[in-house]
Amino acid sequence: MGATQKIWTAMDVAASQAKQNNSNSTVDESIPHSPLSVDSALSFSVMAPRVIELCKDLFGKWAKLNDSCFSVETVSGGITNLLLKVSVKEENGDTVAVTVRLYGPNTEYVINRERELQAIKYLSAAGFGAKLLGVFGNGMVQSFINARTLTPSDMRKPKLAAEIAKQLRRFHQVEIPGSKEPQLWVDIFKFFEKASTLQFEDIDKQRIYEKISFKELHKEVTQLTELTGLLNAPVVFAHNDLLSGNLMLNDEHDKLYFIDFEYGSYNYRGFDIGNHFNEYAGYDCDYSLYPSKDEQHHFFRHYLQPEKPYEVSEKDLEALYVETNTFMLASHLYWALWALIQARMSPIDFDYLGYFFLRYNEYKKQKEMCFTLAQSHLSGYGTA
Ligand SMILES: Nc1ncnc2c1ncn2[C@@H]1O[C@H](COP(=O)(O)OP(=O)(O)OP(=O)(O)O)[C@@H](O)[C@H]1O
Image 1: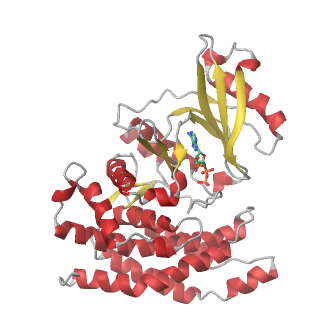
Image 2: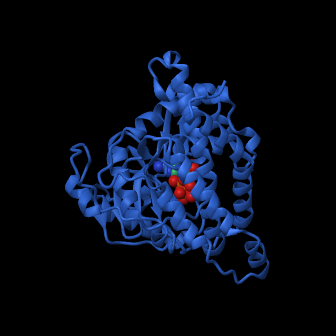
Image 3: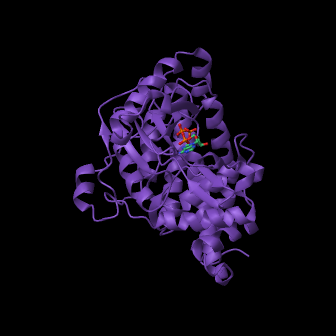
């Protein structure tokens, strides 16, 4: 969904097993670590010298530089992650820029950082995102990406949509060690457990919350689990949060970057694509902006056969259309339940309860059409 605070169910990544299975020799295991932490709640003027000290501790070549060779600025952030840019004038006169990400307090219990770091190593070795340069007590240092963040309307531009599709295909081909079990329903049922037993101190929020029928919601989740189970859908390593804020473009070099792998996991390919299409709605959640069938086909052609997009068969296009638009419903349920938990847990001032209703109502609006589409496809009739 892309709001700042992220809720993550602590799924077992089997890190030790992952290390044993580690067969990708291109992964750099020599990433520097520092035990230092920098409190993200400090004022900027107190924090900046500590960030410089941290950089010196992590990277030996900077240890002897005078502090005046460093400049620190804020890229983005609030109470959760704080992203800083550190520019360093090196001895040879070159200036190098890195990002320093400080995890906010309490994020470690909602985000599985070990799993995120594991994925970053492999994804960055495959050329995705910023390069991981160092890890410290409460954050990480990555390369600074010289690019602009996309807007929702950028994502549907045919040239960019084709590039996103092509890169998503490559992303889905990356192999990350560890369990390959799709996490979608594991997450959704864990979210459901938590979301259905909340208590709000705020009376108004409690009243709104009590209007939700968890019996009905549970039925919806179960029905959709059963339906998607019939699709025999491919499982891939998915980004799971491919919204415009997580896509960056260097216009000069025509280079597109996927960033922010906090939600990455093995998951259904259709979920990743359907979730991305839901993000065409933008920050105002205007679902009338969901891509048309033609726009989806354009994306699928470049996803399925980037080298020969116009040779993709109608049959393959239709199958991926059905898969994506069935899992698109799951994306609504996933973020709806996530928002309920956020409404209770997040310190961020955002109308998460309102967001629950936006996503759940859109699910209900689309349900019949998507179920009919999937059922007729499964029964062999397909659609016109
Ligand atoms: N390595 C980088 N280089 C340059 N800019 C970056 C880099 N990583 C992130 N950004 C910028 O910072 C913004 C926030 O980054 P990111 O999504 O990773 O942080 P976040 O704290 O997880 O935010 P959110 O929760 O809103 O997704 C991005 O939209 C992008 O504009």
